[in-house]
Image (tube, rainbow, N blue to C red; front, side):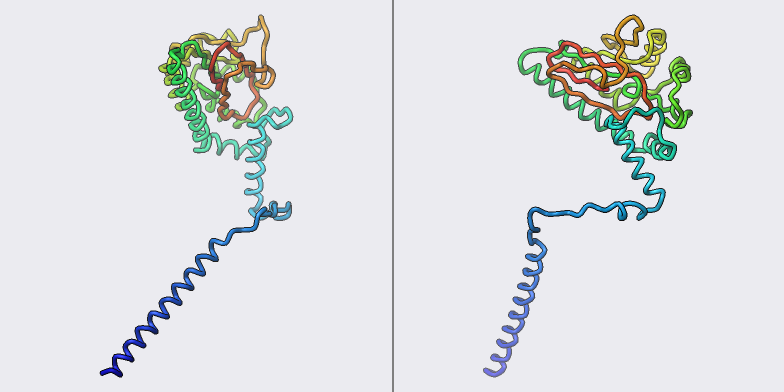
Length: 273
């Protein structure tokens, strides 16, 4: 009996030893996985040979055109009049796919958060937000001209003001949904709303009708292009001098249209364009 007991004890000790060794091995492997990398960590940038040609011509064109679009959005391109021919498919996919809508939605969410914070700040000091101004551009911010650009190559064609005016006169530009939601929220928060557009005064009536039909109502002022005074034709040509403003910029389409900027006296305002 004693002999059998000793054999059983020895067997249990052997099993326990094997389990301990296995546990130690697993702990060693986990420690190896958490070894800190040396600092500073030097990453090798891909060379031109490795960047070009790996994904084929289509992938190379997509990458190049995505870079072109980003540079255009950031105003980092030399003056340009049309989308590069090989980038027209990329621009079309962006404007008609989920990415463009996602970009618009993100801007609207950020602007909404700013509006609510600004209104709360005013309420905290016993003021009202009706002394603050919120400025919207019309084209490509409140109203979308995507149907027009779909008929004109999504920017592949040179921009023709006469053809665009014909589109404006139809009064069929649809609302950008996220901007409509933001517009209503800003109005509900008590901000004065000013609308700016490069459209001429001759298009005031059709623009007003188009805006109202798409759900935009009760703005405080619609400012159109006036031939009698100063005209600001691009976003960078007019210096903003408000000291307490946030600028939100929605993604633009693929053309160079007249853009007007005006800075109203305000204590806290957001410029969306």
